[in-house]
Image 1 (tube, rainbow, N blue to C red):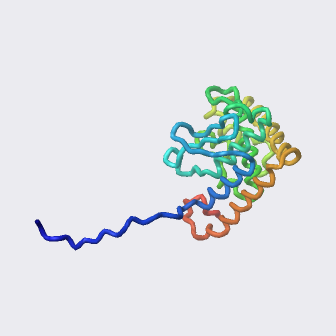
Image 2 (spheres, rainbow, N blue to C red; image 1 turned 90 degrees about the vertical axis):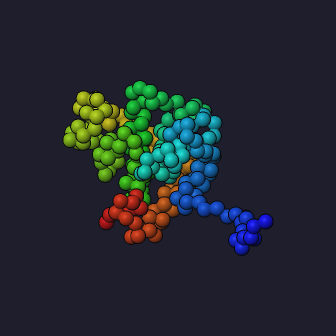
Image 3 (cartoon, rainbow, N blue to C red; image 1 turned 135 degrees about the vertical axis):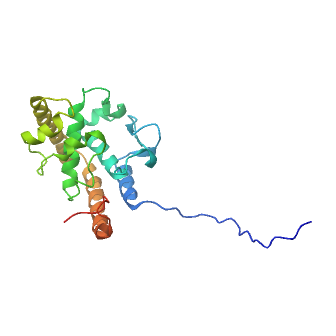
Length: 221
C-alpha cells in the first residue's frame, strides 16, 4: 500500500444563484409582459410559433453585434406592423425565401429605428445581417423618404433599380406608420416596450464612459 495522499478534496459546492445579463433581464421581462415565452435554439435565427413562443438563436449562433434586446424588439416591430391577424401565424405569416415580403422587412427596420430613437439608441438597436445597408441610411427623422444618394447606397446590393428602391422605401414608411399607430392608439404594449427602452438607456448612461469605442455600450458624444 503506497503512502497516503495529503491532497484535500473540498465538498462539492451547491450553486444557489446564477448570473443573468441585466439587458436580457429587462427584455425578457418585456416579452413576458406582452404574453410571449422565449426559448433559444441552434435550429433557427428567429422564429415565432404562431401561438405564444419566440425562438431565437443561441449566443454562439449570432454575430458579435447581435443581442437579445435588439432581436426581441425586431420581432415586436414585425408583430405590430403585421397586426393581430398575424399573431396566430408562424413567423407572422412572412417568408424569407423570396422578395414577396421585402417591404415588410424594410418597414420593420423603419419602426425599429423610430422606437430606438425615443431613447437615442438607434445604433445600439440597429439590425444586423445583410439587411443593414437599408437601416444605415434611414433618415434621422424616421418617416422621411431617403435621398437619391441613400437609395443608391443599398439598391444595387438588393438588385433594385432606383425607381424600385424608392417605391419600396415609400411603402416601408407607410407600413411602419401603421405599426406605430397600432402601438400608440390600439394596444397596451407601449407601456412595456417604452419601459424596456428607458431601462436600457439607463444602463447605457451607467457604463458608456467605461466601454471601449468598439463596444455597443459606447455612445460617442
